[in-house]
Image 1: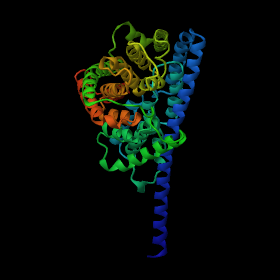
Image 2: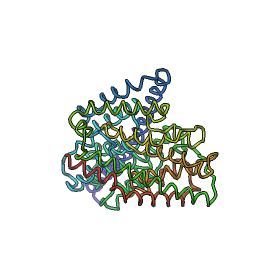
Image 3: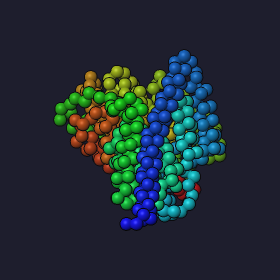
Image 4: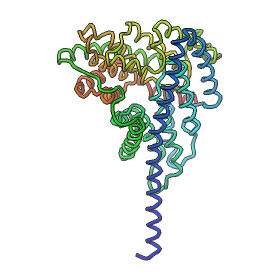
Length: 437
């Protein structure tokens, strides 16, 4: 081998390793952004809750006016950042597959600008009391960051843009939930859709790096909601699973159907016309509606619902039967308003609220963890029609390995019940969103 060939090969290898370092750095960056999003959302929510404890009237001012400002900023400076971000990511993945590896294409839905808008405005919307989550938006944030580093990768790595988007989106959901297995399954169930199977190693690498970064920044391992005591016999599991499948499947399917109907152009009536013609007035009314629900429920419907869910799982709080319906309506109002934010965490909270109501009927009032976990998984699976992702999210979040079989059955059958009522949520929203563009 002559010197010239040797140096050329060394240069190629150096570029390949540099590209790998860039990719790994992007995955770590996704984890850091997920932690930043989580911390900012939590801090702003705590500020809002403390304010409502001192001044009962504060939500009637902050929630509608804050919502108007957030929607105005989104529409003016961060178009494409509205909603959960998962449909936008799916649209871009499809466009990347269609355009090919080197096509410049139309890319307004994934950018550094979108990252800024998604995190800052999304956290602010939650901090104004809107019932929104940050886990779904982390998909668009992760995909946007990976999209930004695409041009830095050498051609020798043969990493297509669509591969990076899937890896970034899956890494975002894994880091947000601190659930790497759920991130892998989310990529398979929702995001791949035709992307080559050989990219699985790329996805897993991004997910692991993002998840490790999120765990390190949060001070180590542990589950999203901690170790929840889940104690029940087989008979109890059967009864709880049957109720969770029926009730969560029907309600989750209705929730998904309403979200899809609200995203379409054919929302009829005065509210539909108002949202189309006067969007800022509409979001102000949504804010007043959420504030009213907050007043009725003593503030429990505000924010993503993380603390309420954790308190319910630990049997540290008793909430009225109407908590789940109120959270259901508050989440739909926040979604219809056009604010940046997702429905993963609120859906889990709605499921926990349903389980909290059902637990006494199953003689599980003193230790409701099993019923709550099954209903959380069932409602999320019915709302998203992603049963295996929902099963893994809940299993990893609550240390629910003793409920593996029950969780799998509930998520699969609840999703099946939901299909009788609604089309698949994210794929349908992506189709509608792409049609609007």
